[in-house]
Length: 587
Image (cartoon, rainbow, N blue to C red; front, side, top):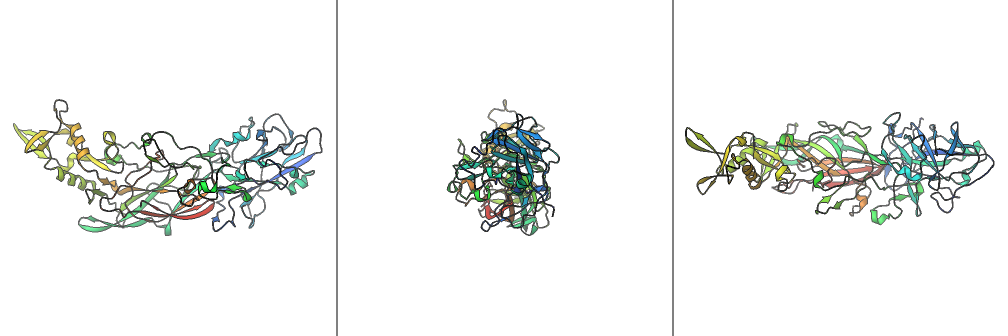
């Protein structure tokens, strides 16, 4: 059976005879003329401990396991160890670069071996070698180093793209797994004396084993039984008839995703299971389940707010097409069950900023949906002053009727002054958080301002039976536009308007934490599959789209009638290791 290297975790090679500093130590050292020696390696990809509790693991798809290129880096206590390459093997220490490009082939079937999904055939790295030896090796797959640069171990902690730049972008970058052995962070595979052999045959029979992992994580979104519409348990009046409301899924994308990861995973030896909220390290299988990720965007909450345009039809985000490397049609307008996206690590914890705002930089799934009837006909739901309407026009009519004895347009007809009550067409709805009224209008709400037609009129208020201009000084504001818009923004209760029925649901992606509020509850870690399964949806969601650079906690609008709405979703975190849990969103 043809095998591919599964992108997983690892660094094996912690041999029984390794002593002292397991992260490298002094290692084997030979100076001067010595007997020729040979070292071979065998690559395996760890994807979890198949016998580890009740959790399951996935080997991954064929494309996720392919190898287009392999480079091996040599170090002495973390410092670049230059080598001499003859043909396709290392034959002696050198004075140039410290890496070797090698060809690897499929190896034997792993069968039921725990922690391994693929094994590559043995590769001879050092042949007829004489001289001092390196004591650490790192393998990097599907990523090409600068051919003239010698890399220290720390240099391989740089941020890189998830997919290899050469051959085909679908090939995943993989590198040595990083984990904790005792108090030592294992960034590289130790080269120990027992792996140095006198003959090529002996070396091939007893290779140094190196485990590697993908630097990418994978998020999939699917639904129970493939459903694309969900009854919300609520109804609205449509032309006087009670009509059940459904959420029809249109697509999804990720909120706060990293498109890169560190080439070598960054971990901290001081981390504890108690502090993170789960068992984060698995040294017997040469892997761990937590990492330090690239930072999320910095800055004030205000600087990351969406900028809404006016009027409302152009004000709400309506674009999808999220692409990172190879994905499976995350569409706007059609939900594809099982669609997926690859992303980088994100383990940044939520915090409260200087203004007291909750900043939640964890990665989320944003579900886009349309509120509609059972057949998918859009229902433009509006909630205002404890009442529910269908259609933005009906909202403007309700607001105009409320203002009919308050705001009047003044005109002159043949010398006669006429005062006419404000009409629905004099108003337009504006997305919350826009412009001058951002400080008083919540992002989830909409409010009314004068329309283009309304701006052509002079506006007056009826006060104690007398008409007074809304603007205190008509010479300053001849048509009282600013004053009237200010009056509308501050005196008319904001509404919740789902324009064209469009709505959004936000689902925090869970990690392996125990739900006690510790960092490990949420996060994206390399070589995990996070499978979000939507079981049901309750509530109308949020009319506001929070963009991918907005780290403010997404919120749902308060229901003016009751608070029973919620979204229930079961999130299965399969990290190429499967972890299942249930979460309730919008509750």
